[in-house]
Image (cartoon, rainbow, N blue to C red; front, top):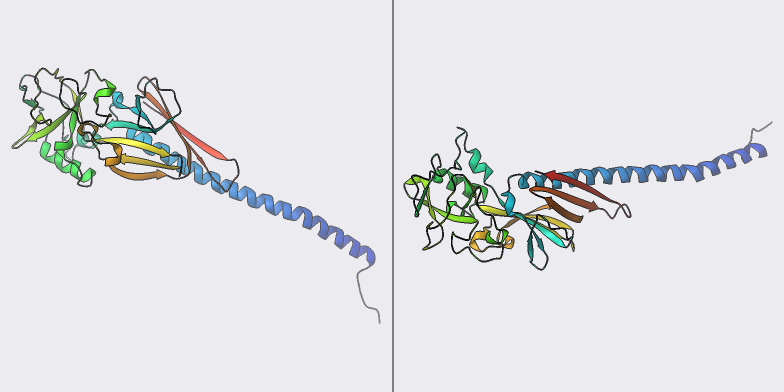
Length: 291
């Protein structure tokens, strides 16, 4: 009887083929796996960095433009326009209350942005179309109950906006003559009127302009290089002497390598760069220009 078996030549061919597959097949699988990991990491970083930039830009869009500052770790602050150093890790600004200006479902604003100069006096500012009762409710909802109309301030459009007079230095504003922001209180039974929010001080000798913007909070985006966290702070009032650390916070993104910002006039460019330990020496940056 004859038994079939591999010849020596066939065995040699099998060994050679298995060697080729062992060498290049493993490399091919390794490259495919690396490519998959890189693509997955890239997509995740793309999505997260884009979301972070959009989150910041959406809030910067409704800033009081002259209020934006860059703050360094030692708490020194500078007007963002013309600031070119890379030591600042904090971007801070006073937020225009766009939600109150949009109003309710009847498309009526909670504050009109107009002061009737003829009806106003040194003690009372009259703002036709404003409803401080509804405004107080809305601010309470947006701040989680932390603030109300008596924490708000108004900014006269067209007034001289010295960056040092917003309250960024941690001292409550003491008068309306040198202040850019004007703290206000409501008037019981008169929802379209404001009085001074500074005890014992009225609007005497103050240049009152016809148009104003209302604000109840400042915002701060803070990058901490030690842990890579990028955090949004809100619900604090610099005109009352508060710092961003007195407000509420929400984490925007983790593993942020760099957070930079520049301004040309009233235009701001922000950049967020992120990195990952899964891919060596790889980082991804997203940037956006806010008008």
